[in-house]
Length: 210
Image (cartoon, rainbow, N blue to C red):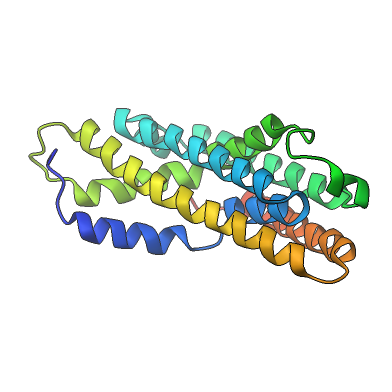
């Protein structure tokens, strides 16, 4: 269908790649551990929506332009790194108190959580290059519609990835809710996650390889 081959291998490879921790996972874990399941789920949906942007870009060839232009790649890379650092600082400075526990996810501005998750994914140029490199491996050279094949494969990958991220959000919220002295733990955990995001952002800025 659409010139796609070895779909089972694509799904298996995608699942293995989805469970590999990265900035997206850290963001979901940070939100779920301090604000609960709903906030983590919204973060996961924001990340999934961001992935759709990369998938559509790969389908229409924009990712190829990004890969070919050193200036465009650098601009997106630095913007993404700066945003990761910003999110990390936000997590470190956030407070997990009894008052914040009483806040519902809606009161904490679910739109903001969603948008942060969206930008965390969209501003990562390596995601764009990943789709550009990974998806064509499973599309035949004589496929009747390569863009349609890219979109279908991307949708499958993103759907499975979102399911995994929702599981991460749920499991993190459950574990966090059962840990004794949860307030102190959540503050410490948030700072650790924030520190990791800042570290990743700095590494992106300092990385010289494309």
